[in-house]
Amino acid sequence: MTHPVFAGHAPLVAILRGIRPDEAGATLEALIGSGIGLVEVPLNSPHPLDSIRVMAECAGGRARIGAGTVLTVEEVAAVADAGGTLIVSPNRNDDVIRATRAAGLASFPGVFTPTEALGAIAAGADALKFFPAEVLGPAGVKAMSAILPRGFPLLAVGGVDAGNIGTWLAAGVVGFGIGSSLYKPGLSPAEVGQRAKAMVAAWKKATG
Image 1 (cartoon, helix red, strand yellow):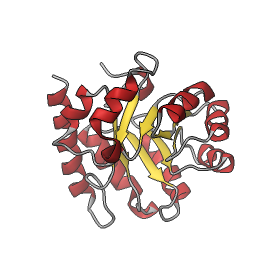
Image 2 (cartoon, rainbow, N blue to C red):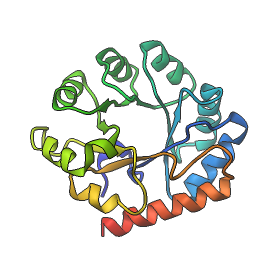
Image 3 (cartoon, rainbow, N blue to C red):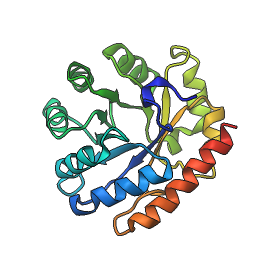
């Protein structure tokens, strides 16, 4: 069982920073075929809205496509227009969170401190993304989770790979954003698919 915020998908968000629209469809198919159905295209990628549009059309309900590095209310609207349904930010911006929810999209803002975490929840965040997770560490996340609402979904982003998923789960994290250990510009869809399979296998093993 995964948290409802992940809409039935494995709680692994593929972060495709640098992907191009011409490779978006094939990469998405590789991810879906490997068991990953949550996809984030950072807005500092080449023509990100075009990639989101391509993948949203290809997904056909099989995957949830969204944007990362979303910093403004205007960007939220642009992602929604492109067919995205997930808004991921590196920071807590209450206006962005509220605009995301008002548009009917899911809000995963980035936080690092208790003040940011509690403020993001109050603004309406659906889940919290601890970023950069490798700096905060599992111990930091575990300590902070003690003051957060019980059961609120937490994601670790930054430094997550197939070898340390279990450690993060033990700290109270229920989801992950997977970046360079899954996708880097230049990797073929087949290579991304193999890496995705390894991540899904590691998550399944760690969750029993």
